Image 1 (cartoon, protein in one colour):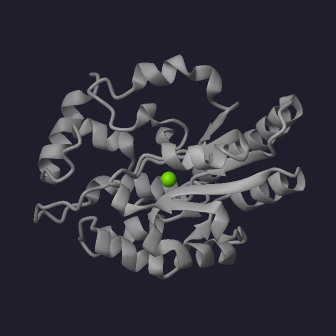
Image 2 (tube, helix red, strand yellow):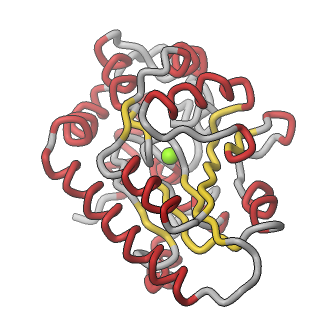
Length: 251
Ligand SMILES: [Mg+2]
């Protein structure tokens, strides 16, 4: 979750039931854990191969997203539902301040493996600069300690959560040989602000990159994919958004 990816809903309809199945799957299914292990096993293979093939002079790096990539915030989604609350930035900030997000399956082991190979590990997240200290603590508590120089957060004053500028900052001194994330925007900004095509053909066109340059993790709870279905009108009433979801489904 990024507190900045979703505008605060302005409706009064406290209906988060649409999240129940997705959050249950994410938090309570063995299949979800298997998907994460599978992805991080693939990440190891890709990292090793990409490193062997890399002939440049800059040191090699891997870039990971944080939320729903290495840290599990599904209890936040669950609490919203239990409290019959809509998402809000303040609720997110209260959750992230607790530093209780657990490591996702395979994440800490993959990070340790990358460092064993001599690959520099960077996190690029749309958590905000205000969340720096708590994020460093949560990552450390979850077995993925990193220093501040390797944590690139969202500067609200830039007014864009696009990660290009931060990817470029890493690329100035390192060769990024692998990306890991739950949102395709963690790989390339081509997937930011998707139009009515939902970037489905774009994903098809990049099919060779998945599992090789970008390792994608499953997140059925939220993401740019969801915002695109709502035509980026996240503040619409949930009943309206449910209608838009149903209308769009192939039948
Ligand atoms: Mg994420």
